[in-house]
Amino acid sequence: MSGVVYPPESVYNLIPKEEVHTQVPQRYMSKYRPTVVLEKKSTKDAKRTMGPAKVEPPSPERYLKKRSKEPNLPEKTAESKDVRHACTVRKPAVPARTDCPPMGIHTKRDFIKLATAVPMKHRPTCVDARNGHKQLLENSGLVPQYTKKKQYGEVPEYLQQRNEEERRAQEEYLNFVKEQREQGAMKHLSDEERRAALEGLKKSWDKLHHEYQSLSFVTDNLSKKAHKDQLEEELRQLEADINRFERFRTIYIPNN
Image 1 (cartoon, rainbow, N blue to C red):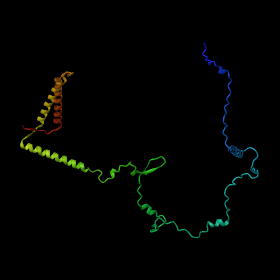
Image 2 (cartoon, one colour):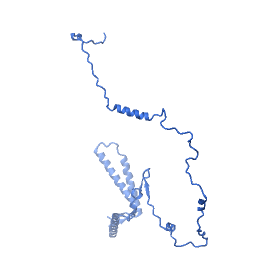
Image 3 (cartoon, rainbow, N blue to C red):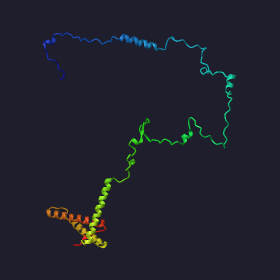
Image 4 (tube, helix red, strand yellow):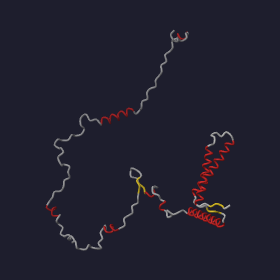
């Protein structure tokens, strides 16, 4: 069965229909078209090179000759030759080597002053573009301006005040330690005692560290966790004490 679809049959389809003719609007035509055509034709004809020449061709007798465009100089005469030797005043002789140079002579351009004058100080500049634009280097931000300050290199006042407070606090601490030592409340540890105390602290740390490494990996109850925290705190305290004994050579302890 073909797929052609026929329109439904109707009596009205037998009536002939009138043909409808669509009217196309007339194409736009500018009113200046004839003027433009004439203007284009006139300019086109003026640039043509074919046809009869409109200027008179050059004559074969008037060709360009050699050196015809060079300027004509006046002819040399006897009078012009004598003008060169018309000067009757004789120039002074060349000064000898032993003669002293003349003093106090000023000319339009005194070279002696130029040689002895202080040269103008060059102001450094920087070129920041390929077309030669330049600006003064001191205002370009490339030169550190703080080095030109009067206070450059000096310690600031707040640092001097802080150093003075630290020095005063250190003096007060030393005076307090001296007073306590004189009263017999503190005892100075010798090098042997300090070394022995340091060795004892290290042995205690090794013992606690071995015990800490022997703990079980899983802390499944509160007692194991509390024991682990206690060992960590004791190890931390021992490490701080060992660091203090190794850092300071002079150590004081109370007599009681």
